[in-house]
Structure formats: structure tokens, C-alpha cells
Length: 564
Image (cartoon, rainbow, N blue to C red; front, side, top):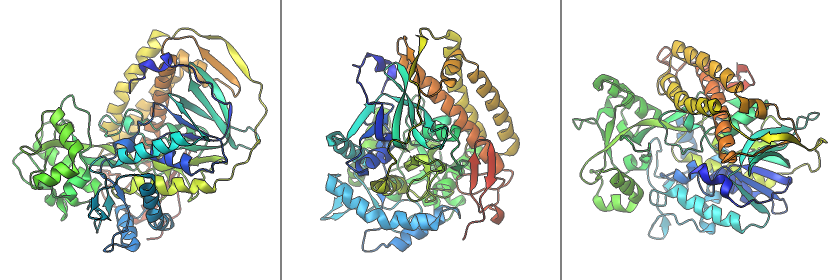
């Protein structure tokens, strides 16, 4: 979705107060909005038009132990094993036990999952001990998002605020309760009150140069929560998907794990299945293992491992099954000149999913009263150090459903004097625009090189030092001086062409700088290797590090040791 036309849209007046504001319109935000009591007036804020989110891109499916050959106990065991000692058992049990009801809810809404006869079809994905992944061809996320969007648009109590950007949280100065957000919308910054704010902004994959995430995934919820003093958790744990399409000019399109589950082989340029050199399960080992296997193999065979690739060969799968299960993958590969029936797909790892996020409990509470987080933005304890495939869409639904129990405190707002800052901002300094554009290019490269698949102390520290310089330079921009010094009630108007898109780009860059800093600091703090975090200088899993890393403002600390 091209943001350049934001400001040509007809102006829509939005209320200055809602019962609940949901920030983000992926699976987590949409489902959360639908599950909130219908007596609440809900504002659903999305940066783009509905739908555009990482959920919409999700191919593989949604995991649920509902087959006769499966059991919730096995799903719990697989999830705990993938999480490398950092899953919260209570949260995992809750996720797995609530799964059947959430699947039934989606089916009732009309999500057309694939079937085998009269039964829901199940496929196997890496690190699952049973076939338990429901799917709708290879566009499961899209099928769910389209259905949820249709339901949201029917609800009279939900107002969708499209092409709007949440700039910051609004805390009551006395109680420190979250009471709304500052919002960039229709060419101005305004303040919108709410009895509760739900962050569902997804992940932060755009902080990495190589990512399967869409352009909207800039870590907004994590960044604005951190700046308001929320406790964050396990930010070093990033899952790198092993098989993203790697071809010059093409986006890093994710080739679903389900392809390997159905029998595709991961091979090098001479056709050798090298993954078995690194793990007995070969290409069906956990994602972090397969990603490191590819990275290590490329180091051995490629002059420049950062730009190299291996191949995913779908030809061992029967042609009819490929056509039935993976029509979208066939189509995208054709667009880039690859015939999956006659040649393997060039692939390499890319940043895919952020296990860390805003620390929450089973009711989605954060450490800030009135602030909630759902989906990839949250750290619920279900993923630990490495997410089990297809548990992410499930998490969005199970925890989104908890908001049916949300009770808000109305009219607990601090008094403010609403005022418009004059003069309005009439011009952007060309040097501001140039600096922001440079940061958007250089920042992801730096983070990919320093906090990608393999990490080490010196490289991390050098990257942190560079980020701190960039943060200072960013704060000194003239646009930053306007926006960072706003106080609640001050409404800043922009008399600029493409004002909303320009300020959104500024805000996303601000968030990416902070997200980069937080990932790097957390990665430097954890001096071991576990799950999605691999240190070449500390390659072992250490029992003393079976803890969460916690961040609040500039303080980093360890949780108490977790039970095995």
C-alpha cells in the first residue's frame, strides 16, 4: 500500500474519546476488537487500509491439537521443547487448551480451512510431533484476516481509523494509568482518550535488512510502550525463517515451513541435503537450527554468505499436491521466473518473528495500568526462546479472546487544556528528509550484520555505539524538535503536502532506532546461546541463563530462574 496518497483522502471526523482503542489491525487487533464487549465504543487504529499486516502474509497455518491422533499434552510438550527452557508452562497450557474453541469460532465465522472429506485437514510442520496445522491452501493468514475484517466492518460499535499512526501513549500524570494515545491523522497530531489501550501492532522485522515482514512491521507498539516505561521481555529472541525467496529485485517472500513438512528437500548447489550435517531431523529441525545450518553452510561454500543462498526443492512432492496446497507459492515464484515443478527455489534465512515484546500476563495486562498488548507485540510466555511453527496465529486468537473479560475505568482522565500550536508546520527541512532516508537504509543493514543469525560482543557493542549516535542526530532534527516536545492537549497541525505520510515515516524511523537499540542491548546482555539467540563467543546453553531478560527504560535485569 503506497502511503503517498494518504492526504488526498476525504477527512473523517473521529471522536476524541473511545472506551477502548486497539492499535493495529492484524489477526490480534481484529480478533481483540471483535471479542471486546459490544457495549464498548472501540476505535481500531491502522497505519494502512484494511487489511495489510504480517498476519495477512502468514502462509503455513494455525496449530491446534484437535485430531484424534493428537492431544493437548503433546502440543504443550512440542511448544515447551521448541521454546528452549523459556516458555511459561501455565501460558502454554492455556494457549493449547483454548485452541479448539478459537478454531470453532473461526469456522463459525466462515474461515474456509482445507478439509479431508468432512474433517479439517492437518499438515505437519517442523518440530511438531503430530500433523496439527490447519490451513487454507498456502494463504491461511489471508483467509483469516479477510473473514475477521468482514466481521469488524459489520460491528456498529467499532470505528476503523485507517491511515493513522499512534505516535505515543498518553499517561495520567498522577495515576500513571494509560488514558489514550497521541495520533497522527489527517495532517495533524491530536490526542484521543480511552479507558483502555490495546497494542496489537505486530513485530519489528523491518529493523533487519532481510525480513519476511511487510513494510508496516516497524516495532511501533514495543517502542511506544518502552518510552512510556512499560516492562519489556526477551527482546534478543528473533526467529529467522530459514527459507525466504532470495532473488535480486524480489521481496523476501516466505516459503512456508509446510512445504518442508510435505516433503520438500533443502539442498545446496550440487543437490546435497546438507541440513542433516547439523541435525538428525534435517530440514525438519527447529527453525533456528535450520537457519544456522544454512548460514554455516554458506560460510563454507559462498564467497559472501550474507548474499548467498541454498535451494528448496519441491519436486519430491507430488505435483497435484503442490498445486492444491501451495498455489500462492507457485504464483509468486512464477512472477520471478521460477518454475517450482522443474527447478528448486533459491532461499536464504530472513528475520521473521520476534519472540520478545511487552511483558503481559494471561489477561494481556502490561506493567502500565490501562495498557494491554496482544499478538507479536506481547511477550505472553508461550514462545520462550523460539516459537513453535503456527503457534503465532493461535496466540493472536487465544489472547485476543481474553479481552471479552476486559473491564475499563471510565472518566479517569487527567484534565488538560486543549490548545492548537501556532504556527502550524509549513515546511520540512530537506536535511531532515535526507537524514531520515539515510537512516532507513543504513539502520537495517547494521542490525542484520550485528544482530542477525550469529552475534558476538564486540560487534554488538560497536553497533550499539552507532545507534546511540544516530539517536542523538535524530533527536536534533527540526521535525523531532516539534514532535518530541508536544505535551498532552497540544494539537500540532501540518500544512504540508503528504503530511501524514511524512510524519508516519518520521515516527517509524524513531521506533526502529529504539527497537534496534533494545534488541542489541538485550543480545549483548545474554551471554549464552539459546533458541533464536546465537552467540559465536558464547555458543553453549547455560543453566544460569534459564531466565527472562527484562527491560524497563535503560535498566536491564534477569528474572529468577525458571522451572524446567
